[in-house]
Length: 215
Image 1 (cartoon, helix red, strand yellow):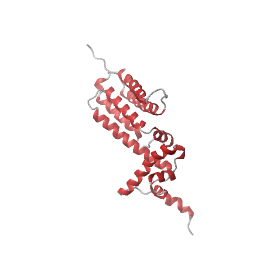
Image 2 (cartoon, helix red, strand yellow):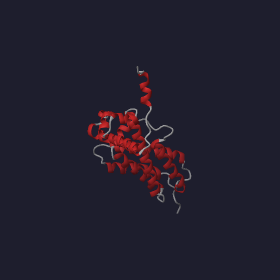
Image 3 (cartoon, helix red, strand yellow):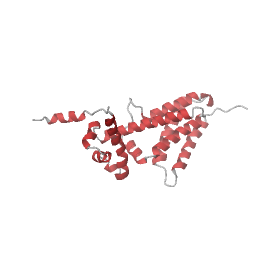
Image 4 (spheres, helix red, strand yellow):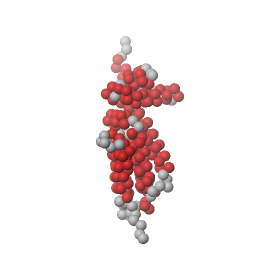
């Protein structure tokens, strides 16, 4: 006779994708989330529908993910990694740019990336908790980029500027404004116009600390 109490223990042991085929299955499952959201909406996002959209069995999904939340967590982690690469690429592309131009480029990149799929972005925000200590999440990656920008361009700032205070404010402004522009702008305001206003707000804050050159 099978001991039913052993079933949850077996189910909790998820396979770690190591072979190419396994990685392809995991990626197909993650990609399927977007298609289900676009076709049926967040309320009907289930593991059965995700499996069908991915072209795999539900059993295959459960080999790698415990439940829908685990799928969304993995999708969030992939999104954070992609955004981190984008932030790092913008840092390199604007290595010689003034502080305000660099921060504006970072904010613009964040908004454009989130705006590619607002529905998915909303689901990740509402159903997946922030990153753990092992993964600082997008805010942590962004804070690191802004910290580097402030440190490398200290000569542009007023001697009385407090980098720690600026780091907190700029990071929070960028996160909040990117979120608002993509998800909460009024119908009368286009994405492009909202993006420019958000950039104007952050740049204006930075300009208030810009070192004034004596003539």
